[in-house]
Length: 358
Ligand code: TXA
Ligand code: MG
Image 1 (cartoon, rainbow, N blue to C red):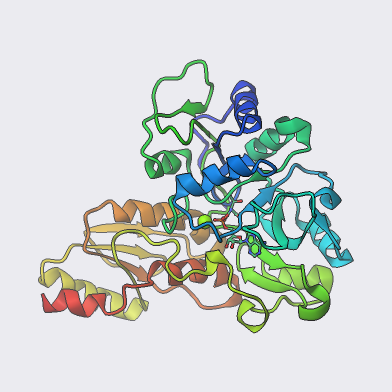
Image 2 (cartoon, protein in one colour; image 1 turned 30 degrees about the vertical axis):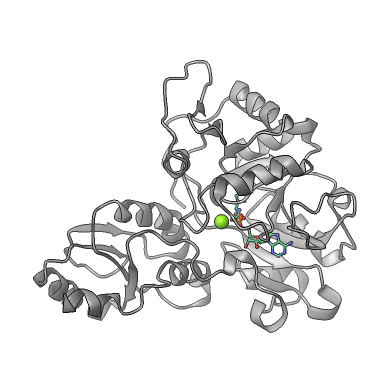
């Protein structure tokens, strides 16, 4: 995985200030290795409500609780099967969220009233430092991705500021924690580009005895890697579980319509659209075409995932009538990428035909 060296990374003072804001019930955006999160004290229902407010997110969508390395799992959840502990052992800190039965002492605000809760320990050093500073490492930070509901998730601090209409200003004393104008969110901690680039893998382990493990959201950690640890391959959600909000079809969508095309059809479609005067942006990984705006992503799933959201955001800003994506390979390694792309194209069916008919 490639990573650009970040311009600046939040320092100790910025992290301490962010932890204090969280302790006072405020919101803080922070980097994780998957995407940036919009955090609040998971045990403060009023603070959690602020997340929903800021995101414009429906109240029936549960959020994930982020904990520090070595956190006491049994404080947050009950009935933890051995298989879940094995997954924690194997993949935390890292991009894996486990759904487990919520401990009665944990307010149901984080799980939108459900009796389960999503929990994960991120591996980004700034996220870890924040979780260790917050309540002396004993707290949990509820955090969805730091984007407005339905938009593409942010993989840089600048993406977060763009989402919430914040202007970066000189902050010599904040040391990489950027003070922002939006009332709802006062600090975005800097942490460079998120290395994984797509949201964590989510496995529902809360009904293991009756339903087995269920893969609610594919990600960097694959179903096969999970099976290698617990000896059970997580099933697709449709077979067993109710739909999670991240599975809403319209998630991760830029404003410009997005369509996927096989490499063989790319050049011809592009030429026909351009002949009609349609400006087209292209995201490719293998095909060579010349477009008005273009991003070529690495032809391996990890490299592609790393660049995907920034590419969608950048291409969304080119004033194009359409973003054409060269269809990635369909093998298991590409499941996370294809899942996010499938959601980005939602609602764009027939867009090429209608642009050609104009
Ligand atoms: O990588 C990630 O997971 C990022 C970073 C910030 O950690 N967070 C993230 O959060 O993607 P969000 O809120 O955008 O997506 C959380 C997903 C949603 O699909 C939600 O429905 C699901 O997790 N989820 C959370 N708690 C759940 C629960 N108790 N049962 C079922 N699904 C749950
Ligand atoms: Mg999200």
